[in-house]
Amino acid sequence: MPDLEHPDDPRDGAKLKAVLVLVATIAFVLSPLLSQPFTGFDPAQMPIQVDDPPIQPAGYAFAIWGVIYLWLLASAGFGLIRRDTAPDWDRARWPLFASLAIGAGWIAVALSAPVMATILIWAMLIGAVLALLHGTNQDRAWFALPLGLYAGWLTAASCVALGTVAMGYGLGSQTSLSWIMLLAALGIALPLALRLRVASYPIAVAWALIGIVAANGFGPFGIAAGLGAAALLTLALRQITA
Image 1 (cartoon, one colour):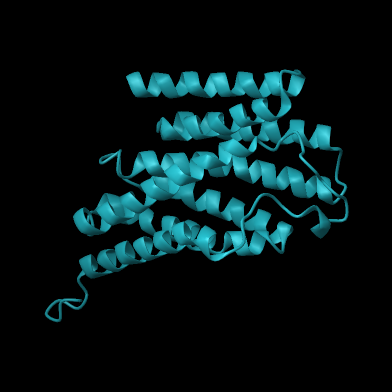
Image 2: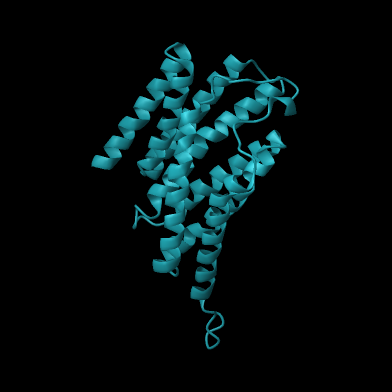
């Protein structure tokens, strides 16, 4: 409850934002249970059918969402209970709230509107990255690491979504667009990994790239994805040991 003796106390606003982040996180975590399973955009919803494009990781890679959901939930709970008025946590809350609130409805949108879902997943990525850039350098296990894993997977997922929709609307071949999106993912991930210095970010992107290798084998595209994963994992290891 706000302090009636200090109605303009900024700590009340910080506490409210901490509550909103927790509520958005809970909604985000529960969203897969409240909608049909999402296994990729329905090819029938686009002019050109796209089945298993090269840029799509193997199905097992999506298991990372279990870790992301649980860690984000723990982060939001810790932030509310232990860091509700901490300025360094508070700076990150609006962009994080926006990302999670969009994410809470993302599956429902993706099941019916691939183009809008692609726009929204890029918005989710931007919110997650802004939260990391403006957030705390302390409490890394509670803040930076879970958000880094979330933002890293969103980096890969955003490029997969954009590539798949571009294929579905005839903007290029599956092969050429997969190469473009692979290079785009690496072009985003490598500079961001250096800027953020949060090891879980490159690890999450690398996990997606390893899933691409598993789906494509060791042809040129799979090898390129594997080399990208190796570069990101090397960077993550250096950040861990620094």
